[in-house]
Image 1 (cartoon, rainbow, N blue to C red):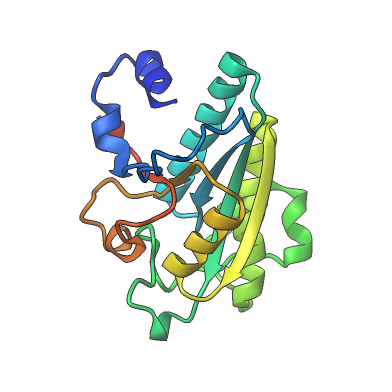
Image 2 (image 1 turned 45 degrees about the horizontal axis):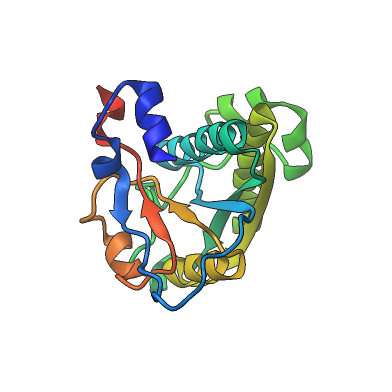
Length: 206
């Protein structure tokens, strides 16, 4: 997948930039599995970096479908946790105190512009309402790509919940909106994470 991305962008350094945790080694005695559906998981919190990670995941999914005819599903996961108890309150450099949006959740589906252009807070948006808005944004992007998409709202520790979703969905890749192996979330996921973890390439700002 990354080789196709490199070819399309004319770069030869994306693999080393994007692989934050390699795919775990599989025991040699396991038989190769038959071709299966591909599941790409994205840790999404509506920050610019996580939006970039989601966009890259959709692009890779699209290219994979074209090249292999495989069924590819992109899944966005938003974890709602208690920031006061968390050592990693923001996965992808999203400010802990976000400006909430001046609209009710019931109005969110009416207009993308409504969500993105309201500058001031008039009413308090609860964490669950905020989560609904964030996942709605992810679903809206999925509609642009016209691909298979699922979203998950989880509660608890971010690294723990990401691990659970990756295992339950038999994910092939987890995308994070960070570009360094030194990001605290990479340390939190640990070296025994069940799938490869990809970040966003540092060259994206060039």
